[in-house]
Image (cartoon, rainbow, N blue to C red; front, side, top):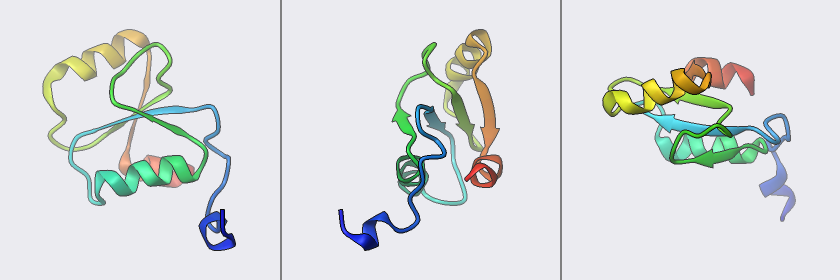
Length: 85
């Protein structure tokens, strides 16, 4: 990796898995990139290995929400996620 690519990258989310669902102020791809740039892993579905669900407006269907609640997955907003990093 070049020095430019490494700039702004951290490992503060290392070992953490994120699911992004809903509509956000920034694009989903930008959110996914921030997760990866800080050492986290993106996932498309919620499982017992999911650490955080980043919830946006108009989250698709209640199933992700119900599954996250059932599994005890921490649900955070876009702003809470940005505050983490």
